Structures are given as C-alpha cells and as structure tokens.
Length: 130
Image (tube, rainbow, N blue to C red; front, top):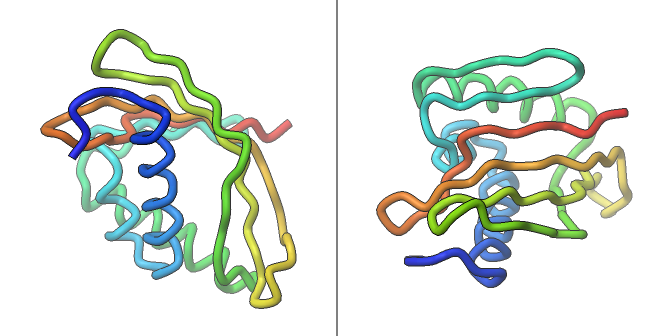
C-alpha cells in the first residue's frame, strides 16, 4: 500500500492495470478510477459520476477491443511528475495486442492520479490521439 508517490508505486499501478485489463471486465478496470472521473478522448469529454457508470463505460471499450481481436495490452515510456505530495500526472504509451502479441493499435495517454487511502486512483485522463 503506497504512502507516497514514487516511480516504483506508479509503475506498479500500471502493471496492475495491465493485469486487470486482461480480464476484459469493466468493473475490474473501473476499480482503479475515482468518482467522478473525467475522460478526454477523440475531441470529446465524458464525466462518469459513479463507479457503476465508469464500469459500464470500460465494459463497452473492452468489448469493442475484444471484438477487434485484442487479447492483452502493454505500456511503455512511463513518465510522471508529482503535483504536490498526493497527486501526480503520469503519461504512458499503450499498445493493444492480439493473441500473437502483434500490435493492433497504440496511443499515448496521460493520467491525473491521486493517492487516497494508500491507493493510487485515476481521476482524469487525456488521450493523445493526434
């Protein structure tokens, strides 16, 4: 349980995210998000006011990825900066992978993270989809 922000804690957060993603269960992914959660993607912004709304959103996303042949994901290029002692801005490059570990698509995304009750949680994210 992290008590401060560190490279190790933030890397562990994204490693755990990859494991949750592999289950293709929106509820498991949503457990890593605070409510409300703001998602900025493809020139649109969405706010999810409850964990149930966030879970439904991620289930739709995961179902779409799975239908397109995605079976796992990975990240690389983690960079982050502390925003005080309890928040950070972290950015990673994501790759969605098929069952042969071939890249289906990739993008860069930034996450506003907060440390709450010993857990890192995402409260906002921004896709870099240009």
